[in-house]
Image (cartoon, rainbow over all chains, first blue to last red):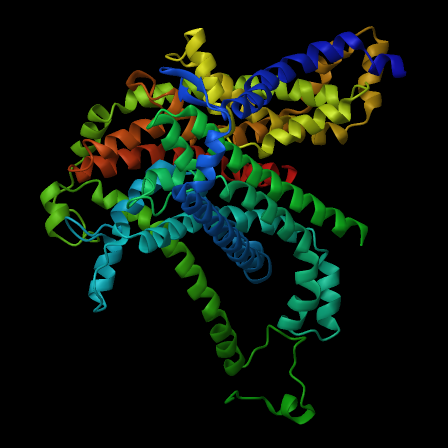
Length: 293
Length: 304
């Protein structure tokens, strides 16, 4: 039977198209992009070999470090918020609302599928301060506070980015973690309850330990996305004011397509890729430890 | 607590938990009180989720003067449905929406075909190095788009196809493959190989058995994969900005961004109308497919 499953013609015919597209569009460019880090210029101006100059520039470029720290700050905060709030929603769905949770789940999930650009424009208007106040400032003024120029300063712009991204993603994490909670057998929870476990104890000793695998999976998924944040920041603040909300992804985009420096752009992209690689390896190592224990 | 207890329970000092239907008024009140935090939480959740969308709709019907001089949460003085006509025409929505469709549909078809075939080859067929190939595909999930766009921009420019839909279709297809191949391989793992072997006894090759049995069997998985990829491609901004920057190639996302930067900066009603239109398109899809979409996207995340 081995010979049937080892059908060479079938393997070639079915695997080659995907492998070819993947190799040409993803794998080759990754190595090519690495090669570009030794050059300066763009496709329009032509390339010039500069050796390690791009790496020297990278190390001394304050904007890169700002962008790096912004990316780290955003990724850590966002991943925490997504997993924690998502877990809160999942617990609400599974243990408080139970069977009647479908409607709430469906409605809270809706922002997840909306186009990021549309949401970003909506949030620009919600947090607007000029020429007239948006909804948020109107509420602040109505309760007697000052209206804030939200997108006019780096710190407050960061707050708006975080609020918007939480708004448009927690519905997803709620459902994701909820689908994991469904795997906890009902009889375990029932028997603990009969043994007299109170809500908090039940949560601390039964539910929380049993939801660790799904929390870990959502953590991986979340960090893999948040470290590459681009769309929401680009559409909401454009990285501004100044450079104050520019992640690495956006700094790379600007370097390559506004300042036409593909070589330095590739160098920043390489830094970003190394960050992704490090995070992936850390995750793999910790998940392996989980399995062996 | 001022709960009224009936004499029987007070006597034995145990609440009658086994008779939930026969509540005293006090217990009923306590029960309602206990539900209040839940109701507040739900009301808060729904308000926070839905009110911004409602706010967007009421503002899409206002004139500039109305928007600037009255509170934004007030209803429009007059309902200006013509904002939608203006948004549709000035925002070039017909072009950008059809561009998005022209790019998304071929990419989805290619992803599903290539990805399912590769998943089948890697999971059902037996050959040396298949674990390695699967791992190479998996690595693609991690790679950020920034790492591939510059060489591709060079290559497509040299090939002279930079001003067509082709770069976007190719990149979306390739970028969708890692997750799809991985998901399909996982789904095929659940199917016993004997089914495919049995087909070959009837004289079909493994290729035929893929098209005759494997692919049709995966109908649900294919829909899941297509949903996941649809939202990734439809909502993408990076690739669309770089390879669809030319006005005639603008996808819905890029078109909306340009519209907001130029015309929409001073015409609030039409800007709100434009984001309403792009939102409602998705809403209609969501009304019919919400459970599938939710399950599909969650499956995509767990499998990834």
